[in-house]
Length: 120
Image 1 (tube, rainbow, N blue to C red):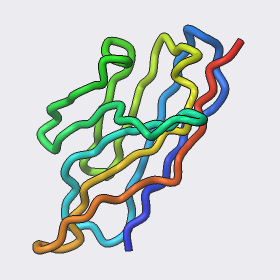
Image 2: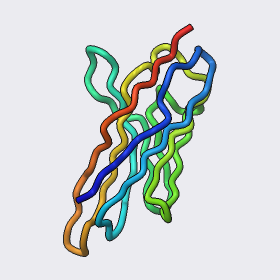
Image 3: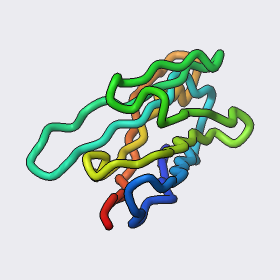
Image 4: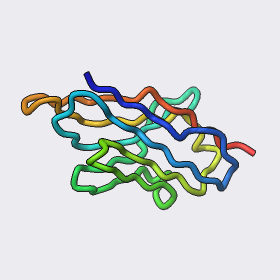
């Protein structure tokens, strides 16, 4: 079994920063693309950013220049550094990883979500 555990959410004022982390544990053969998504109240879940195993990154236009995704392959962990936060960044943030539990299996796993609230 594989489990993703997120941390780092909270309440922050506009213009502030937060760093999210998501660590995978369990029977892991390899971890490929890691990503972050978010879901605001009353809205559909949207993609925020992702990073490949070779550390190639892509970002949604709404966060480009403010958020930075990174990974630590030795720890099976992905991070999201969020700077200059805006009220519209308020959402539950979810991490996702494409994980192989053996040489023939590849599955997308999701974290439980962490709340980020940007408010004065």
